[in-house]
Image (cartoon, rainbow, N blue to C red; front, side, top):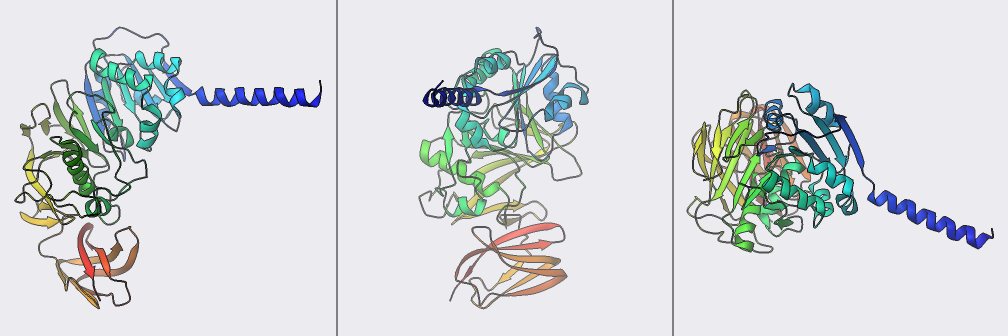
Length: 431
């Protein structure tokens, strides 16, 4: 064989290998090979993403009625197999984890066959862009919608897996977005939303968010969630709704739309149900801070604390009835989210600022003074892109001062740690 023929054969073989790598996916199977007949029940599980809530996961598996569970992943391996198959004490027929990294794999007949047998589908965490980008317009997405609406299975997700379950999805195409970024510009280049991805009963007109109490860029995720909802109203005229879970919280929705909140009663394990209450955002434009004021009643929230039994609940079939929670109103004024502080029945800024926290002057040019009734553990001045410009230990003092005359003028976030609780306020440096 001459050299040119060998090169051609080598190139063909390489192309075939590459094609196989593009279409191949990894299966991890635990349990029985043959599917079983069941009397399974429909439902939804929305998990906050920092750790799996055993009580909610047991609830989910019980709805399979001894059937088959499929875990969909974009990376990783068989982490959930033993956990679902044996560790939780709920009998299921099998658990199959499938790692899918391309749209070709999402169209593979073996994937569709395994998925079609499921009575429960659970979507793992990671980066939701991998799901949106690889599943869009594929047989996998079509099959998921069939399973949920026709076969009426239970579907769940954690973190990124939770993020893709609503009618509107924050895609994370350009990575995550902080609340400060989304509130200062709801059309920030990282605020990428997609509509009509999955079609799940009770989640129409809804955008979900997980890791709700995670601090990013000085604030939690509430502000960005409100910005997503504002975009839904402004862009699509939707009666925007949102469902969110703190990191160790899980929300389990039954066939009637009753959403039970599971968590540890000794910790801040909350589920949130948000809905557009008054009119549309007053200002929701490219490059402008969001204002959604509406007489301080822009968004109506039912906040439910989780427990081991999922005693607190909210009805997302009518978005009116609930038990064990409290109603609140949130609003945004010139890029600042205000929410009630349930500790002292006052109003607070993003991050549950206490009304007793004094910050002056603001705007400031040379220094900022901070006074606190509870005692200051730490203060930090943070740029809107998340970079910490100043940090100062407080050691429990009631008053401290930050010198800022060396910093460039502009908008910042001042984060104050009182004990183990963060509070955040916007401040402006002028010259």
